[in-house]
Length: 224
Image 1 (cartoon, helix red, strand yellow):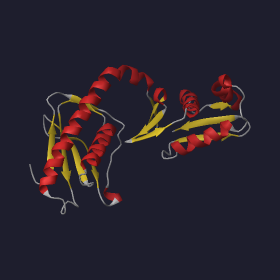
Image 2: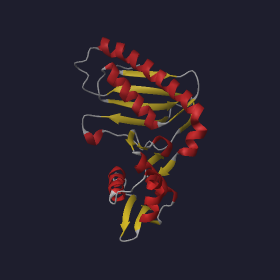
Image 3: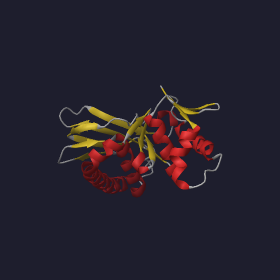
Image 4: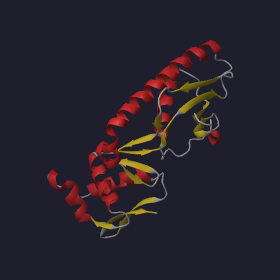
């Protein structure tokens, strides 16, 4: 292939979750100490059409990571990685050596991911809730947006589960405190407001979601 461009092929068909692809490649590049500016393309084997792509660039406005909310259906794919710039001081022998390591790491990453996903697809599908541009995993106490994982405390997760189950509906304060704190002894008066504030901060990157305070009554998760 052309200089600074490398390709990974798979012997079996697989499905790809873009967020996982981004994470595996970022981690592999870090381990292999490869240049940090590159373009990744996932090509369909049948017609070489680009099914998904993203680019990491020195200029923030040129960095493109499309929404990772959709899975690529099970099919035959080829992953191409091309280093775009800032490789002049990086010897070609190192590029080749480290890229071989990189491709092996990516390959193992996808094999492991594929196995885990195959074993847990049914369970995960039942546990995942879509919330705007987020995926909410209540069993794992986390939100996922593109390649970013946002950890939730147990109480944050329990509160968010209640709101997700009843979007655009006012839930009274006493119901929230009873449902979340009932089994944990004495309730500290401002705890609810503190946890609501924490959830707001974690959801603030999506303008279509808003946790609003209905004065004197409770809270409502507004979802456009």
